Image (cartoon, rainbow, N blue to C red; front, side):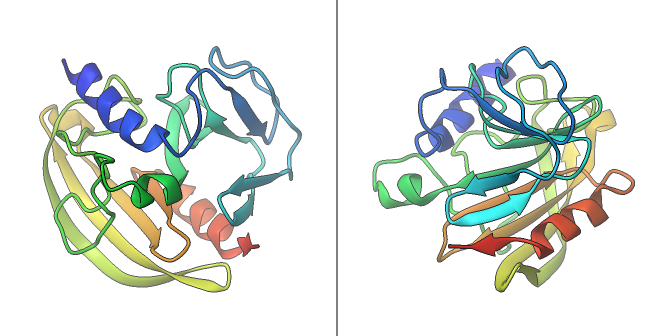
Length: 203
């Protein structure tokens, strides 16, 4: 039941990412992943809408996966989806699209789906995460993403499965319609995300 709920929320965003059958990835180091058919060496640029970032060494970016669950995911090591970078231009321009705009002013402001949010963590990848039962804002304001200032929020998220409780960070560029969500604060990953986003360029 939870997997189906999460899949529906992903499909709401997938409208802007293309058909789920299309598969593209960029990698810091080539690693075989069942839903990914192409990899590229470290330092390659990733394009998310008008934003361009460089994939950290040892990490992989999947623009589109066959099942849609990993669309926009950054992965590293055994963690399937540490963060997501999404271009929401098409979804936000469609008045009938089932989407909640990102906002640090609502409890689950990092979650764009219209169904029940789920707790993605290192131990609970997309499709296997439990239901999120609470989301308390612990930090907000503006943070740099390259030359732009993004609306920033950080939430302490509680889950139906308490072992999946985690912290979620979000960067939202309302003009560019680009959303970046970091699922969980893993050691060293906060700094990597901050560095990745600081080096972002736009066209």
